[in-house]
Amino acid sequence: MIALELFSCKASKQIELKNHDASLLKSHLNEVSDADEIYEKFKNVYYGNKKYSVVDYHLSNSELKDNQQNKEIAKLKVGEIIGPIPNKEGKCSLFKKVNTETYFTSRQRFIYLPNEENYHPTREPLIEKEELLRLINNGEDFGKLAELHSKDISTNKNLGLLDWVFKGTLLAEFEAKSKEMKPLEIYEIENERGFFVCKIEAKWKKRELTKIIEIKIKNCS
Image 1 (tube, helix red, strand yellow):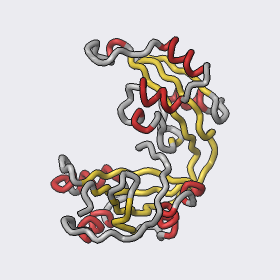
Image 2 (cartoon, helix red, strand yellow):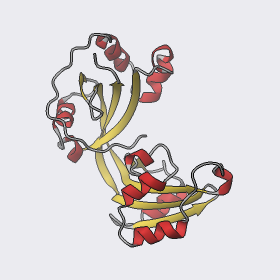
Image 3 (cartoon, rainbow, N blue to C red):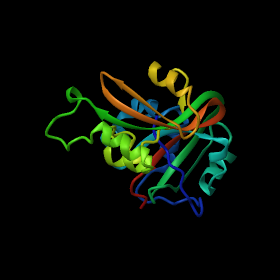
Image 4 (cartoon, rainbow, N blue to C red):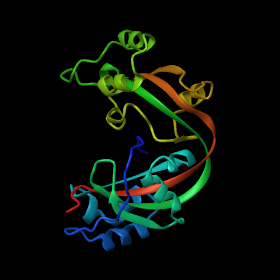
């Protein structure tokens, strides 16, 4: 899963591509139900190809109402595809609505400081965990601290935010601890990988989520 920040989009007008075969990309989306599957089936198109990237993620009902692009996705029937239309990077994407299901889920941000065995000493020095906790306790923005100091490359560019996480997908110690927490509360975990500080953005409960696959086109000309 990937992390997803909401973004504004003035319009979702169809973009006419010149150097890409949109109908071929749509045919690929028609055959799959997640990002891993599209990479597996069409390795020659997507692996190592800097023209495209493929992600999948989930949107809650409130997120589907958040901006024009998400509203367009919400209108789709299961299995339908929209695009290419503008995406959050200012380029364009095709979107497929895979399904809508109810999950027991939560959303969290986290900051990861690896231990010495998992972090090469020639890299940028780690912030001391005591200093990190001091900054958090003094009211520093958690997302900005994640961006600056977290060494998890999959989320630090997204202010530490995970996509919706489902029951059974987190390590057991994280899931058990986070189920005790309320929104905006923070908990700490230290294990063999290192030190984690986690902030609850949305508590564990049943939610209806819509799964989306997105093919991002990096050059829309």
